[in-house]
Structures are given as structure tokens and as C-alpha cells.
Length: 447
Image (cartoon, rainbow, N blue to C red; front, side):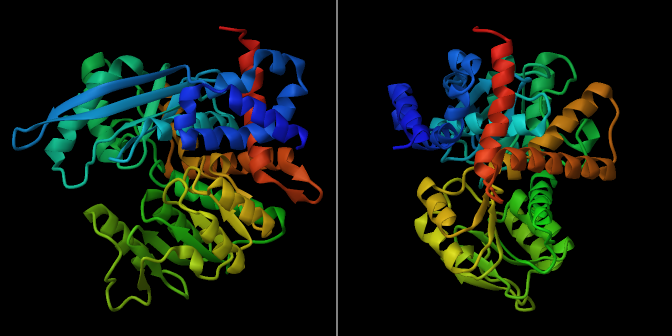
């Protein structure tokens, strides 16, 4: 066993016993630990401060019940959480997701990852994540509004412009952010930047909706440019049909790539010659209506492959944009066998640890979500700045800033991950994020 592996096993055994029941959190911590513990041990101050151990233990976990009433007058009770992981470099920052499958395990791992992602942006942002097991599907607008108001009644004391600034995530879009912000502002009695992803009419930023998907393509373009190549003409397989997937597909199409797939849990929409802008819009409309991707219009060249994942199709670049752990060993082997040269994560931790080993063995270059999908939080940071200054940027200004931020993230990661003529983007992202966090944590002492 090499030094990094030995240090990682000791570290993982030292975590709280309760963490053993959180496999996603354990996976996220292990993937970081194996890259950064040797860096930590080589710096006496960082080792003495136990930086990674402190990052693995959130500052606080806020848990609460959410009681609300549906349109028929029936009372419902859901669970809500906010995991505030670290504010060493800025106010807590991270999304809220509403989904019946949300667990504390998910939110612990996402908050931990968010610390590193936010550190990579270079902006003064800490890490957090939150949400509820509430399912908005099939609910009326007034029911969603009542739930958001009830949720915010419990969350409001714990957030604020200089304390914790949530954003949207799965099933929390502009509508939900509007209801949440209205409820927070009413309770606080002030107007302030306590949430990002707001509508343009009340302090939001241009390009926030597009930011994660567009930023993913900008990061991929930076990876390709490093190799003297361009994305034009490349075949790109995208999973998911949500905000990140559709905007990544749209931006890749604009850049001249052939986007051959989008998908959902029912199957894959496959276009061997590339999806058109009209077909991507159809996918967005199906998502908005709560429908799956089956039965595309007859005029479309794209066909629906029931039960299939995107990765069984031959392509050059894989962009998993659906959810965590969507790519296991079998899917990873399909990516290797399909001739893919590159995989960049649009979702958070969509590749399992076993699948990542398959990809690396197969020579597929891998970019982790904490770097590749940081565009969303980067523009959230810009929204916070715009709110503070009361000066709002144009879409062109935000897009230019996003391109620069993603290029800078790429360069920071590449510098740390440089090795024998190749770049280990996962290792580079972990180390670059860790160094910034470690400097801040040790500078502030033991609290």
C-alpha cells in the first residue's frame, strides 16, 4: 500500500461512526483524501491544523420539519435540511433541492464538494447545501408556494447576504426561488441578496439559468485547447434533460459539435447526426411539462431508445448531467468501448469510484464536477456582487466573465494536475481547492 492509500485508510477510519451510514458522503471524502492527504502531511501547519478532518465535519447541520397544507385542505409534513459545511473563505453558498429521494447523506456529500468547487472559482464563497424530501411534481403553483413559504419560515433564521446564500438546484428553479425570496424578505423586513437565481425583475443576474451548462462547455473547450483541438465536429453524448443538460447541449451545438443524445429515466433520445435546436427545445418543453422523452414528433430525425443510457452510442465526449452515481462500471466500460476520449461532469459526482477506475484504465480523460460544473456557482457569485453594488451586468458581460472564470478554473486545476505529459484533472481540482481552503483555515486559528 502506497503512502497516499495508507493515509487515506487511517483518515477514513477516524471519521465519525455515524458517517459510515452515509455512502455518498464517504465516497466524496475518500476521493478527496487520497489526493490531498500527502499535501497536508507535507505542510506542518496544515497537518497540525487537521484541515481535511475539519472540512469533513460540517460547521452545522440544521434539520427541521416543514408543515404545509394542500389545495384540498390536507396537512402534510416534510423534512428539511441545510448543511453549512465551511465559511472559511466566504458566506456559506450552495443550492437547495426538492426531491422525494433527498437524504442527509446526499446533502453532506454535496456540501463537502461545494467547499472545493467554490474555492476553485477564486470568489469569496463558502460551502453549503440544503433541501427537502418534498416532491413538487403534480402539485399546483399555490401548493408549491405554500410549501416554499413554510420551508423558508424554518430556514430564514439561518441565512442572509453575509451568512448563507442558497441558490436553486434540482426542482428549485426561478419560480421556487421567487417564492422563497419573497418569504425570506417578508420575514426579514429588508430587501437583500439572501438567495441567488432570482428573477431579473427583482435582483437576479443575466445568464444564471444558462451558467452551469454553458460553463461546462467552456471548460471542455479549455481542455481541448490545451491539446490544440476544438470542439467543432466532435460527437458529444449528454445525459439528462434538465437545465444543465439542455443548456450544455445548446452551447455545444452553437460551437459546432454534434450533440447525439439527451436522456431521462425512461430512455435516451438519440440523433446520430446531431440534435437540432428545435429538438433541444422540444426536450426542454417536455421537461417543463413533466413528461418523458418517448414519442418524439415524426418530423424529427431523432429516435427514442427506451431503457437505454446515452453511453452505448459511439462518441468523442461524454457529459453526464443527470444525477450522482449515474455511471457505474458497465456504463464506464461502454464509454471506453465507444471510443470516448473525454468525460466532463455536468452533474455532481455522477461517476462511481469503480467506474472512474474503469475510465482511467481505458485512457478516458476525466474532469470532475467540482471544476467542470462550477459555472453556476460562479455566476451566483457574480449575482451577489451585482446585488451589493446595485449595478447589474448585461448578458454579454456575464458571459464574458463566465468564460474567463471557467478558463481560470481550468488553468488552476491543470497546473496542480500536471504530470508526465498528461493532466489528472481530478487530482488537480482536489489539490487546488484544498490549498485555498487550507490557507484560509490555518490563518484563522483553531475555533
